[in-house]
Image (cartoon, rainbow, N blue to C red; front, side):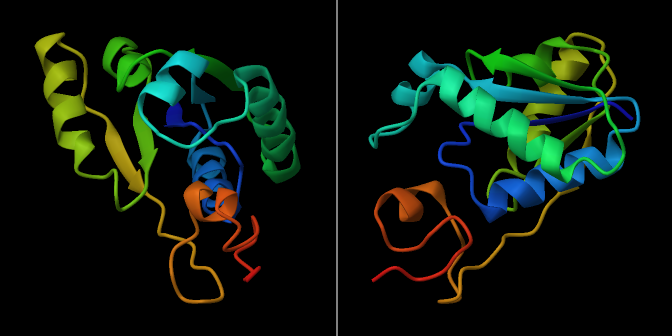
Length: 153
């Protein structure tokens, strides 16, 4: 299967690592990482986000550390919601979090309109911080937790 995973990934934390691991595990025909462009990232969030090139380098490094399968991985700029998975018929599956899983229905609707096969959803469970709440970039940036979910306060 060719698997996609998408996000801003800035900063990268253990929840993102979980998404990447799922994509790598199932992506025997390759993995496409949709990394939000600077413009799209700042459109969709109020906090600061590292520049695209910096995030791309970090994502590439982290995936390299996690890739026990020697997968073909491509990192591409994501300019709008669903753009890569909606427009590319060769993608078979999408790794999502429980929060983003409902979007799969809309994505598949748009794929059917284009006469593409629907995507298989691969749900990666949340990774919890040591306080029992889910790890998120917002919490990391706010200084509540580090990228591994350890409390900083």
